[in-house]
Each structure stands twice: as structure tokens, then as C-alpha cells.
Amino acid sequence: MTIDFAKFEFFSTLPATRPAAKSGHRGARRPGRPLLARALAGLAHVLTRAARAVSESAERRAVLNELARLSDRELADIGLTRGDLPMLFDPVFGAKREAARNERTAGLRSA
Image 1 (cartoon, rainbow, N blue to C red):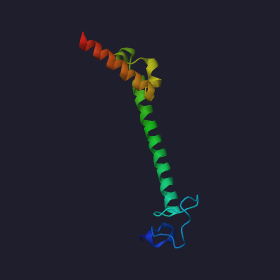
Image 2: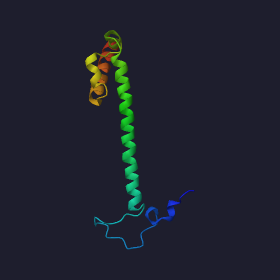
Image 3: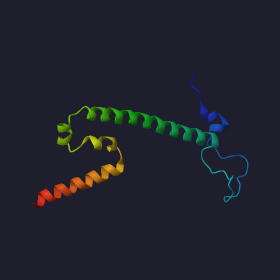
Image 4: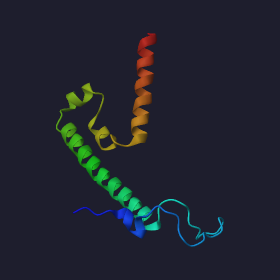
């Protein structure tokens, strides 16, 4: 059995039957989706972002665990130290490392 949500007034995209309030009024209804549909869409967006954050957190934790298992020599080979590991997923740290790497490679190319 499938449910056709378009039949229900809450999910209808038809304009409201009552006159709309003045456009400057806070309670003015905008044409388009009704309030319940917008609320459900907002809730779905929040839940999607939360699920993505949990998933990305698990991936980051797995990468950090894998890097923590490397020896100091192996970390040095990829340009990291043990002290860098906690900051790896910080965007500011990443930007600074990228800038430093670009400076080093530019210096090597000019030499």
C-alpha cells in the first residue's frame, strides 16, 4: 500500500485558501511548500548532517589509529611527527602545513 501525500492538505503545494498577510509581516506565508513540509525537510537535513558527522568521525578515528601504528621513521617519511597527529584534521593546521610544503618545494625548485 502506498500513500499519496499530495492528497493531504499539510503536504499540498497549492496556495493557501485564506488571504496572505502583508509581505513585511513576520507571519506572512510564502508561496510554495506548506509549513509541515518545510519543517520535515529541515528535520531531514539536520538528521542527514548528523549522520554524516558520525560517519566522518569514525573514518577520522580509523585514519588516526592507522597513523598511530606507524613508526617514527615511517611518519617522518610522510612528513609528520607524533605531535602532528592530533591536529591532522584541523583545517587551520592543514593550511599551514600546505603553505610550508609549498615554500619548501619552491625553494628546492629554485636551487
